[in-house]
Image (cartoon, rainbow, N blue to C red; front, side):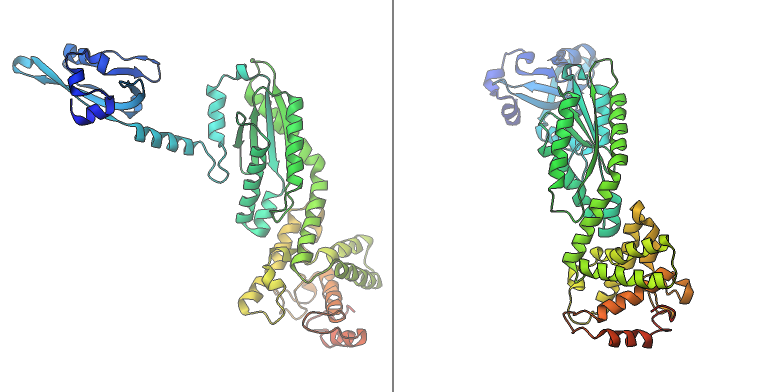
Amino acid sequence: FNQAAETITGWREEEVKGKPFTEVFNLVSEDLHEKTKDSMTKVFDTGMITGASLADQTILIVKDGRKKPISYIITPIKGENEHILGLVMVFRDITNERIWQEKILDLSYRDALTGLYNRRFIEEQFKRSDFSRELPLGVILADVNGLKLTNDVFGHGEGDKLLQKTAEILVNNCRKEDIISRWGGDEFLILLPRTTGEIAEKIMMRIKSECSQVKSVRTHLSLAMGCAEVKKASEKLEHVVREAEERMYRQKLMEGKSYRNALINTLLATLFVKSMETEEHGERLKDYCLAVGRKMGLSTQELDELSLLAVLHDIGKVGVAESVLQKVGPLTIEEWEEMKKHPEIGYRIARNIPELSKIAEYILYLHERWDGKGYPKGLKGEKIPLLCRILAVADAFDAMTNDRTYRKAMGREEAMEEIRKNAGSQFDPEVG
């Protein structure tokens, strides 16, 4: 009985002499919550080596009553004719290994980005857990609106922030005993023990209210949510989750347009703050474009699309660095390349919003030139959509006739002369 044995068990060598093995080594199965069979007797009876590993979850109750997880091996000492002369027991305290094992297991059940439980954990809860004592069990399913758009426009880093902020709000509005998980890419599932559907709806309202006040993300944080309730032990949790999911999707359809309108307004507000563009600039462009469009005999539908394009043509600049947008002097080559990304960013925004999808291509081709020297595609002449050619002239005219930080405005006649001078190269000669 060496010093390590004394440290682990709490017994001194002189104390254990003459004591029964089972009194010193009081071994308990952690899973079964009962004493293990006398391992020493087993080895004497069989002559075979026995033991317990980390996976066996054997607990040693030490002298002062504390519990320590151990691994051990008992080996017989044999003499002539395989007669057992004695036994050697080697054991060690595996508390640290158990702590690490639990940490690793916990990590396997956690979403790395948000720190919430992951889908694997929840699905195992479906199989293992008995929720009959937790009834009624409220279920909430939430979907982050606009995550794909956020990723496309601002990058996945900003999308990650949106998910992390959502997770934070869910945790803030739930109890410690509630189970909150990231159910999928943009979906979260909450299980609420001893919670009715009515209370679950109130929790949803609190969550939505907090989301509407968030200012720390670059887009409008909004969740589509649905809830349901497990009332009887006979009900399958998977079916109730599906019911909550269906309600969530119905809400997403009903509230989709108002969310998209709020998102557009948020993006425009961000644009006005970041760049030197103003709301008045968009309104002036709309007036100029409509005047030219009517003169050229455009249809009502084309005029509507032209109005929308005039207001939202630079929406892609929300994805360009503010330092580039607000720079007073000439842009460097790298800064110019950054600036030239905005038509493609605007195109992705418009493609993701059904109400704007009809002008997505116009936003993409707005900076093409009549002579083919524009960007991003280098389109030439009439291959450039007509609405883009009209807006290009209106945008240039408005830029020249209004003050900029780096120059004073020129007169309207002087601006028109400049446009005529560039007709056939930068501009469509038939527009103006």
